[in-house]
Image (tube, rainbow, N blue to C red):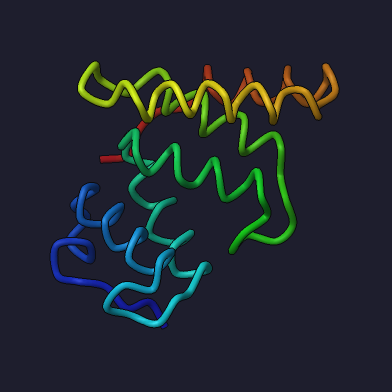
Length: 125
């Protein structure tokens, strides 16, 4: 069962990302990486950069989403980098480093697949 706040349930991407962060860290809720991934992915699909970064990181580690998926990690980290604003420069810079680490472990076919998914990505309302 998914357990979230009213704003997250109503589709507010910021609330979804914040709820994901709470589940990731276990602040105020039981620590649950599957729930964190669920909420991060919902917000990421809406184009919310922080959630794209966080779900990309989770895919890169295989945390909450078995198994580890470098293509999805690359996709979401790349989208986060594209969508971060100047006020998120520190997060942007870390995402660039994380993306480089993921890419170093990928084949050219995997990178091409991720790039295609990035080109095809359209945020959900």
